[in-house]
Length: 163
Image (cartoon, rainbow, N blue to C red; front, top):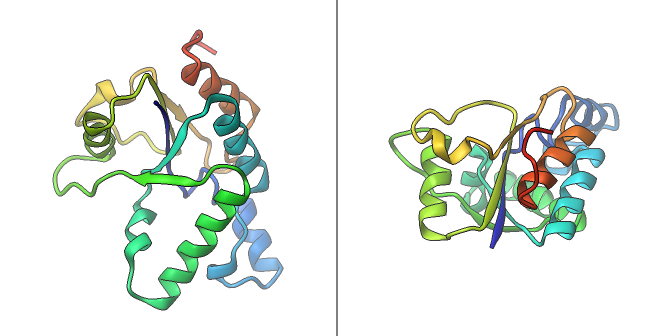
């Protein structure tokens, strides 16, 4: 199995997509996510067969009880599915540690032949081995760009990781 660990803020919810949603008068539960980032994410899934695992703090909203929160998550999941990158699973919530603890716990339960982490922040100090050679740090102002896509593709295909 191959996995893409996806953060939302700065990766597919970019300043451009948030501003465009605002200018179009879209409420947060109907906001657009960055179409370029969604396209690259969908291509990664299509070309590698990887599953998308939501690693973002947004994952707590999946089982939220508030109607607004449910609508925000429904919109997010629908746009990911439409882009060809449906969410297959969520990383567990861990009391101690950081994102690497959560990604590591998921990997412990779901052995993968390859994985990539798409995140705008480096929060992988608890288990650095989880991110070393697997993290594609996304520039939050840009979302997933062509170089990020090529680096993620190379990691998932086991190619040279120095791109």
